Amino acid sequence: MTDSQKPGKKNATEESALLRGPALLRELDRKCKGLVYISEVDSPVEVFEGTGLSDEMLKKLHKSLKKRKQTRLAKLKERLTRIDDGYSKSRNENAARFSRVFAVLERNLRNLGIHREGKVSIDIFIYGLDLDEAIIGVRTRALET
Image (tube, rainbow, N blue to C red):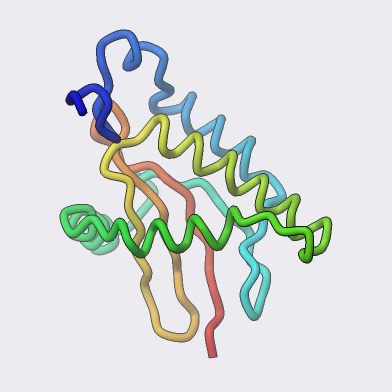
């Protein structure tokens, strides 16, 4: 596998086609509009950028990026994007929408990862770095009792 084939590695032509900054935020916002994360309480999925977070949270996200918890991210993605004939129509539509969100994240960000903050009321961040090294992603909240 060459460097340009590795996840997060882009050649010059691919980089020029990537979204960054405001364009990426708008595209993610469009994909997330009305999308919910289903746990004990349904929570909206919202777009965020690092500049809108506290310094403490930014430090945690940068630290979490270095750990690159790919296994946890892969499991979450598999669960959120799974479509099954046994699921309700709305559940499968939600899964298809999550697939489109993950496609935008994977195509436009590098070092894609996940960070969970909390024990019962859990903030979930799925994020990475854009071409300008800005932290961008989506976040939601889960309730796990």
